[in-house]
Amino acid sequence: MKIIPAIDVINGRCVRLFKGDYNFQKDYLLSPFEVAQKIEEAGFSDLHLVDLEGAKEGRVINWPVIEQITQNTKLAVEVGGGVRVKDEVARLLALGAKRIMLGSLAIQNPDILRDLLAAFGSEKIMVDIGYKDGEVYYHGWQEKTGKEFEQVLKELLVMGVSRILLTDVDKDGALEGPNFALYKRVCRNFPKLLVTASGGISSKSDLRRLKNSGVSSVVVGKAFHEGWLSLSDLQNYEY
Image 1 (cartoon, rainbow, N blue to C red):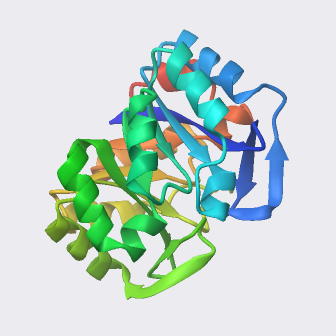
Image 2: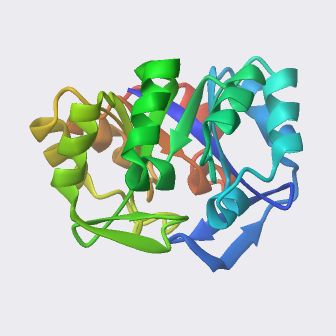
């Protein structure tokens, strides 16, 4: 199981939200680039970078931050937040992003998703799924699809999706532990999907239980920004 530190960006600043609520935003002193440098210096190979403004507005906004990190670190950066069109996917990959996370586009425009999978390959595309009360949420987790959760996963598999980022919205930023039962169920029922877990991680015990659930990777954000887990803890884990 790979551990991937996360940076969320609003107005060029490193922030975290609580349960996906933009009204509960906490800013951090260091810039996103400075945090990325610390993550690289700690020995990590990957970074999870989300343009929260983009997710809310429906278009990538924090291009300078994304470019600064992808062009000036060796981190393999997965980027998401507001990506809606093929040109943005191509531009992000040209800047050096390793993988693009698609939420609203993937849920609302399956034809475009198929085109992107054909053009760039399933390794370059990850579908970002917000889970809450058995439903799938999108548009910065502000709207729900009305479709049953597992039906959405089945449809994504048929289209050729191989990777998903799965976040229990009610756990995100709460530091109360992940939804272990959710990850275990998805990994059991959809073994062809590579699942990245996100939301609620606060301890080494959480990481150990996630590893046992079968997820391929886990995103850790608030826990390291708040000092609950140090980058050294995460890099040298043996769970």
